[in-house]
Image 1 (cartoon, rainbow, N blue to C red):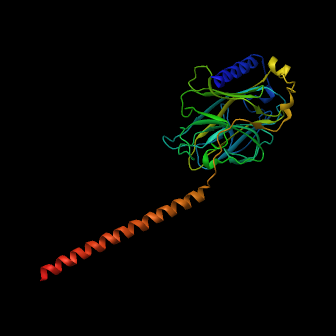
Image 2 (cartoon, rainbow, N blue to C red; image 1 turned 45 degrees about the vertical axis):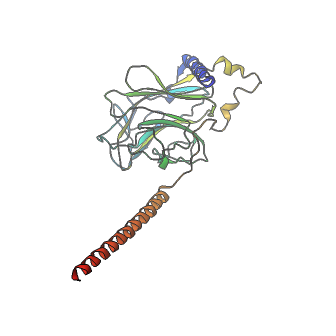
Image 3 (cartoon, one colour; image 1 turned 90 degrees about the vertical axis):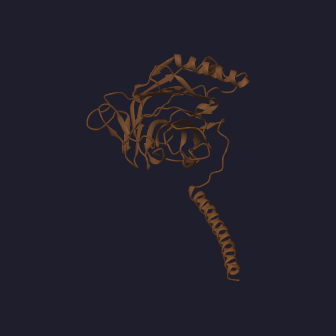
Length: 324
């Protein structure tokens, strides 16, 4: 009951902050995307990313592609909201992947293994994971939306879908829809909120809320996507960024007199995360599987040999009796 009440209060706190918002055009992305030549004002793109008149496609529906899209202006805000309009679609009916990511990180515009972007990042990653043949020891369905906060020293365990390090997550069926999907990522008063509009009803549905999250000001917003053996089109249609005002509670600080702005320059961190789980490299797991299979094969051969021996002895003795 206490936890539920706390979550409600945090949500109300964030909702109050969202009411007072100011759109930041230098961080936003709207049609038409291109200015002169092949440049998007305040944005860089590389890898497989292509820009058309109606979408920015991070990856095409082809195997082994990576693409990134990064804002070039530092986000010098303590409280903000990013609204993303996107579409994930492809020809795959039962097999597809891998997904795309929203970033708020210290470094920018580097290709890598985490949904197309670099590993060992400092900041926030929100992952829209569509990989249909999911990895790891979890039971949640895909597509799956989750978030992690790293300080630059952690490795994202893609082999296990990152479930050992996520802050929270939810299932959302956003792939191959007739309508576009909208996501709202809010960071206000040290609380991270992710909301989705999957059905196109213009109503936000909460995916998750995570309190006690430290994200310094001055990082960069970005997007990335990747395909492997499976593929999809990952399209970004628009990005709207708002600066949110602090709540009165945040301005006043807490009762113990802590500096309410101290978190703004802190290292990225979060108190809440999924329970730790030991990583098992796929190569080791495959090796273990081969050993188990080998043992089973040997046992089967031994059993068949024993059964065959007794069957032969029974047949030989039966023939010997008939001869006498």
